[in-house]
Length: 402
Ligand SMILES: [Zn+2]
Ligand SMILES: [Zn+2]
Image 1 (spheres, protein in one colour):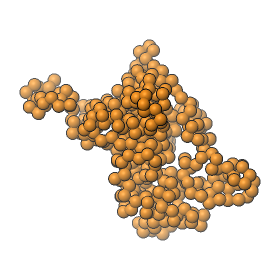
Image 2 (image 1 turned 30 degrees about the vertical axis):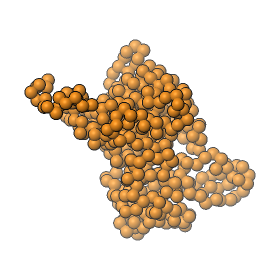
Image 3 (image 1 turned 180 degrees about the vertical axis):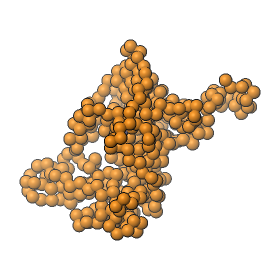
């Protein structure tokens, strides 16, 4: 119980947060300074964003790649009929700032798997997922683990839902929770590496606004605990809150960390180096790696590039440079015979001859996402770079990915 004498005059001023401040552990300044990324502005994302705005989380970045449709209006408190056809991320950001003009909400119309640099994750205190597919969850999970940022996942279906908290580097991660069925579904998606955006967003799940608000409520409560970092306020790290709205079963499930799980890579620290994506070439980065780690160094990419397309039928090879995730199905077809060409993938650059056409491209022209991380490697030595010039852009609105 809070001793009434401890309530100061400032606490009694009836500002927006005065009732929240009556909570003994509540620290409005922690929330005001917090940076939170919300991935997905669908049914869950709407409720998450609404809650974050109400409690005054000061810096929110919303990531979504869809436009608003009529069918969203039954489950999305932030969208109106006249918003149909507009970007979900943009409208959600506008409405969040109407709810609370004190906060700064920015957005990116982007696909979390391909378009958001790892350095963006590193800027965050917490990441929240409001997603409907395993591929995006896995991408968030691996990114959060690499840069040591906790993330809170939510999943809903009809009247059921689960909220889970994953805290790197030592706890169980999302991939640790995946079973055989999850991998089968994931691999089925991945075997069609060049699915169109339309195909990617099919496989819709029935959801209700009610379960969205229950699970998003739990997610944001866990975020409040993560942001406050108090011993007497532990989040459900490595665990999930499961709620069955049909029979009111609800319980906590504890996930086991799997030592062989491939998602447990954590980078030591990121080194901000001079440059920006518009002027820094991949050769500049390789040269920097050689300077820092010696001859024979290479640059590992977070997002794989397609360096060439080979047609087995015509025996022709076209040099290109495009991230795997941004390649469309029609681009991969051979213009001469119409057959599907074989992509030549590049994960790392070491200056070998097949990379010449890529090395002189700028980071931006190569199609790599904003504020991505480049890992210089030489044997067991490693260092991770981000380009300083990208940082100010992280909290700027972006309709297209940079
Ligand atoms: Zn794991
Ligand atoms: Zn051909």
